[in-house]
Image (cartoon, rainbow, N blue to C red; front, side, top):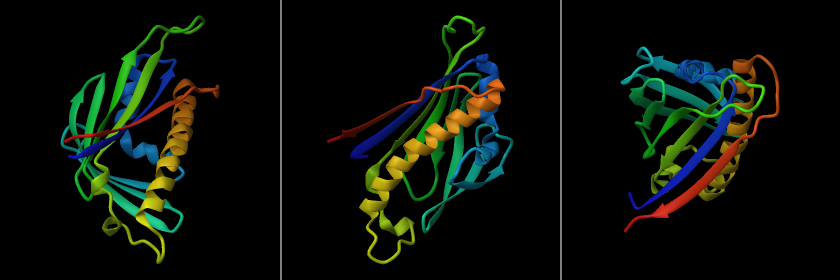
Length: 178
């Protein structure tokens, strides 16, 4: 891998770590929170080795991502890897943190994605004429941030049972390797 791009999206839910972790294991349920994730097909019980096909649609583009859960460390981490088209992997990290005054529990949730941008190319999508892959990637990076924030807000609302302002931190970094 010559270069790695990394996204880390994080927030805090006011629930015990175990409850948050159990919710994250229900991966097919994510489609209900996402504007662009149309369906999730699951092969397996949700544990290590489970395979998912995630069907996304945005603008004039559709794409099915193929992934596999590679490791589960209950109740703190769920690792996964994309198995087709793109060199990418990531994880959900779940960590108990000091709750603010008035709350009994607090859990920081981080969604980490690392991918090799050199593996993202026009051949994996059926692009309309005159549309460049660079344009699509630029738009999708912005879309990932917006979608991540929307999904996290809706998930926290469902988990906690009420709506509240949710602070979502999104960090992006890019590194080059020799």
